[in-house]
Amino acid sequence: MINREHWQAYILLIFTTAFWGLNAIISRLAVGEIAPMQLVTFRWLGVVILLLLLARKQVATDWPILKQHLPFLCLMGICGFTIFNALFYAAGHHTTAINIGILQGSIPIFVFLGSFLALSHRISLIQAVGVAVTLLGVIIVALGGDLEGISQLSINRGDLLMLIACLFYAAYSVGLSRRPKVSAMGLFAVLATAAWIASLPLVAIETWQIGWQSPTMTGWLLVLLVTIFPSFISQICFIHSVSLIGPGRAGVFVNLVPIFASMMAVVFLNESFEIFHAIALALVLCGIGLSELGKPGKVV
Image 1: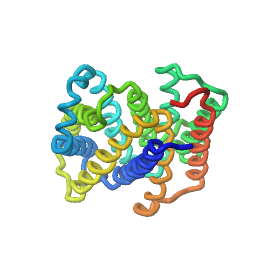
Image 2: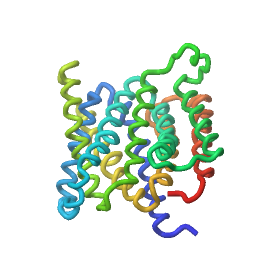
Image 3: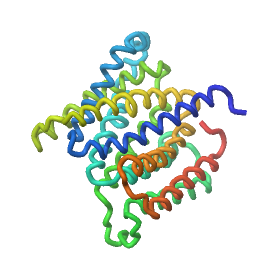
């Protein structure tokens, strides 16, 4: 029987993945409205400001423990927040929101592989099949449904950036299993601050390359939306959910992201949902399901 804490985690994770699906839409809407690294920097600056207003007491209480883990937490914030989002928004300039959402569904598989490599979790035959099925779905998306592209290596630049981004977020998710025993707000405050500081060199490089392009009013609205929903609310919900049911079980819910992203892309961006998208989405979800069902021993 599912206990109350598990139900709470499941509800939080549904909201989390819906807002992450929204982030794929924002990545496309941001094109021409705000530069990618500007969006990353202003996003995390907004989160830091919110945390200064709302989480000062939690940070002060948790600080004796947090400061003992600062190098590790800063690395996590840079991988999961700065690098992931930089690649995510850059991908939005070269591929569709549907592709971004489906490729983001590969994160649970990368989390699973990362748990095997870093935490020595066992792999069953069913899980291995699940990995292969999911990767097949990812390949189909990356090749735009044209399997002949394998021989020509014609993979969309944006899809490649998104896959690399997923690797970094998977590393962050695995790292959460070794987080210090502190409040979700206290932990998030350190991660977000590290993410914002790490984003400053990126926006400086971007400005040096293309010059400073002031965001439009739409760009600023997108910053507000991405700060509140995919950044602040979603990350707090995800961190708290991991504390309730563990990174492996929480990571499986990421398979909802491609569903939400695909639905929103069709409704809000008028993107075409092709047959190869449906096939790839089914393969990704089936592969994740097999990996979850095939877990040997205790699920953590």
